[in-house]
Image (cartoon, rainbow, N blue to C red; front, side, top):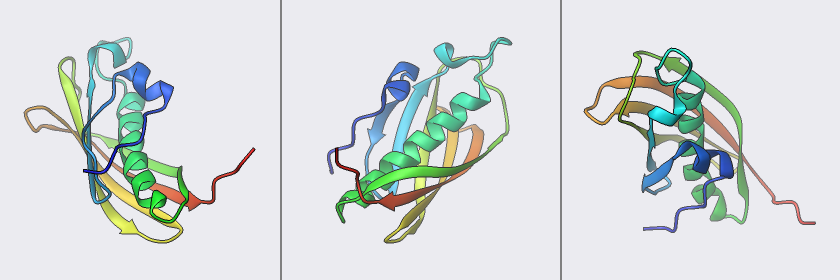
Length: 131
């Protein structure tokens, strides 16, 4: 297995952790409780953050092969059902792996397989800035 990239501080704060790391398929999970909105359900923004973070990690693994980095430029998320507790699991599957971009379809589900959110993310692969 390829060494997964480190999560940014926001993802760490939200409790996002890697379950499986790969370029074609990347899986993460996140606790619902600390990421609820005022009505006691998982915040839609938290689902979108989980989806984008998962896709970005996979894209970063792809970008590293050519000495580049991946930056997210687009996220689209559709929320299907609400969740109040437990964990949600995000699975990003590569839709396109190019030299300058990578796109992923991400499904966020409850641990028992109920679909919570469907997302699509696009990352550009760019040269890292030094200094």
